Length: 168
Image 1 (cartoon, one colour):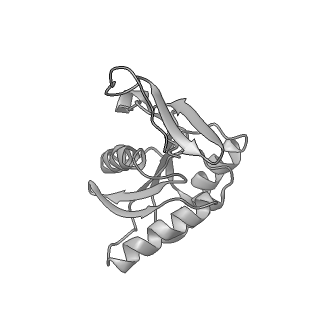
Image 2 (tube, rainbow, N blue to C red; image 1 turned 45 degrees about the vertical axis):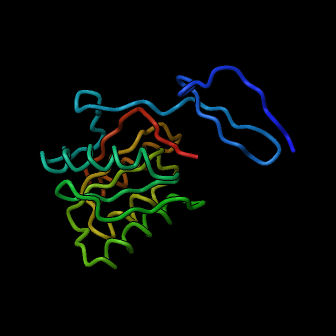
């Protein structure tokens, strides 16, 4: 048996999040960030519509609370598909589409949020294949130009938040 004696119990340690991992402890900044419309940067030729922008901000908030690699599809202020916890972001995107389809929900015209940047264009190609029309993501990949070009090729509006939500 082990007994831990400590001082007064604190509700939370501000700003830090602790996770036990095999043989150690992961200490990371707590994800307290939120974005507003004023924080966003449209990086594609096509601007999002007002509804796409509302849906993008909505699914960005949802993605914050989903295990990484999180992909969230939303339409008309409703989550319609979530893919998470995969080794590959593109598989999370495919799973979100499968879940939407399984529930009989129409993906075409939806927004998609990714909790971290797209390292390759394949996630955008997968989104286009199911009818996503707007993507919100942090940006910051060394291949951002390639990913933006893929969005432009598919006529998808892409928004950068410059903030990452990555839940371990």
